[in-house]
Length: 387
Ligand SMILES: *Cc1c(COP(=O)(O)O)cnc(C)c1O
Figure 1 (tube, rainbow, N blue to C red):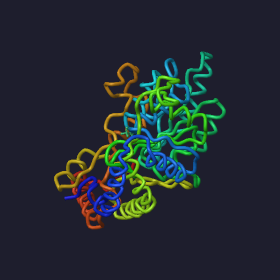
Figure 2: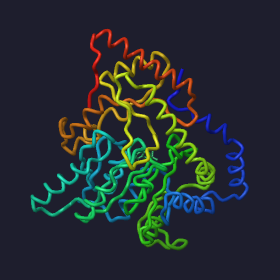
Figure 3: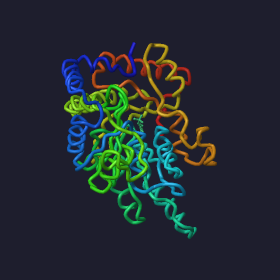
Figure 4: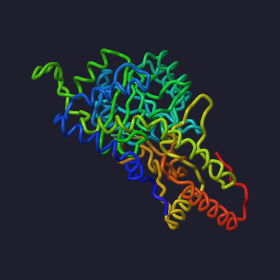
């Protein structure tokens, strides 16, 4: 039996610190926008190498509010990828803008800068008013997107970059933290993320003081002073308890990411010669393995075979966003984004979390090897490398 993730193991490790932080908040009797939130905002922003952080109630709201702060709204378009979690696109839709997708790089599963450039060129050639306002690269699975090329393109076309770093706490591109490249970076503290709370939470980080001030208004009724409202903001706050608990966990983030990386390397070694494609780490990138996603041509069979042996795996994600019913009105079709679509039928996420044991990993790798040997015998073919 190998669970996909077991959050109780992490809790047990830091139980005393968690309980004493909880007690501290209860005893102070302040639960909304107090010292814990403002201190955590400073600490997390510093961790990411930027000036400001604004705690919000989820990663989805972090993206939505960042887009709003950048002035994205009705009639605008925002470019992102279709292999992400649907929240990336939903946050765009909530502003009234339309998500526009581009395909991904086969190596990292992230936004393909060439596809982005091709889209923008095509748009420019039509001579119509440019509706694309922003790019939302997603650092999917914990591997940073190709920020060098993306920033260069955004500069040339005068577009905002807002990063979806919800799966990439601590990931780096050229020694700079994911989330710190664009005008704003958006994080989720959903319990299973690399930095996860005990409930929902999120943060927008930025170096821009104006954006910082706007984000603070947007998350709390547009309130400048008590009962003085200068814009129509909502209620999207991180609460004191989550902030206090996340402050405890932030101190362990680097250590936990290192454990994830060590385990990822172990998996890669163990899975050599089993016919599956393991995640790559591009030169200059630091992958934090929020998920360890392999690809297999026999994904569904492998998924079922592991399940039968008590090994939990998940598919991130089985239906690309442009083919979801919720996005019927975009008028996309199968065939629009070939790599995205092909990979949605091949990807499989193996259990990987800092507290996963070596014997559990051996069990997973052994089961994959066994599946590979059996299906090799069945098809009588040894070669199954593919891209
Ligand atoms: C988790 C996640 C979100 C949404 O975060 P929530 O806190 O669940 O709202 C957005 N984008 C990506 C890529 C995510 O993984």
